[in-house]
Image 1 (cartoon, each protein chain N blue to C red):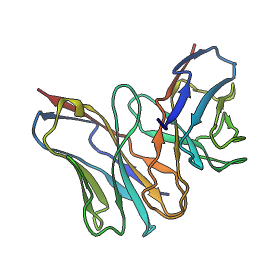
Image 2: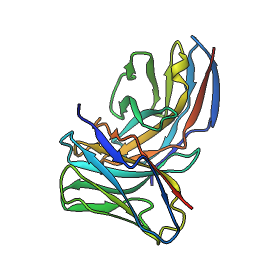
Image 3: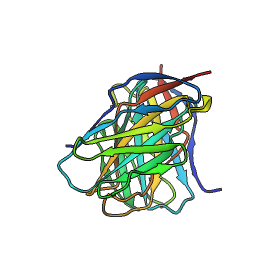
Length: 116
Length: 114
């Protein structure tokens, strides 16, 4: 079945360490996204990519980095510069369409990062 | 900048009754899309329903319907015949004409009572 796989599901990290969250999709979607969710709050966009080898900053990109070397993969690195990295991270993908049409985002199951 | 507001942090509904979850939005762009997602306790986001700004009819998907009032800039989700499995967080989101990204509201936690 097609879908998005995020790993690891749970991750613990010491302060000062970088950590990379994996996101792989087999939906043949052009666009991929990373969102952050804090407890009891909505999702905020970190980075997005509409095509291979290109990505743009979202609303809260500071302290994060991404790459898009393959269509299927969009890993997110949480760097030591991210001041409060403990959160739930969701990866999503969609077809790429201009306009405000119904290209629905499909989400992965998420990765929960805890900084000790 | 666009903004999505969900004013109900939490709501209770009796099983088998209908419930309305509120969502208001703010944009000056005439072309936009509105989405509702469900997030169970497991964390994944499940797409429920979509409404385009130019759609004449309110969207419906099974037990879900969207009460779209464009002049009021509201896009409330109506769930009919609530089930215990409807207990979850519900998020309203908006997509603008300029990009594919969604902007999310803060969410409403719905709890269905047996």
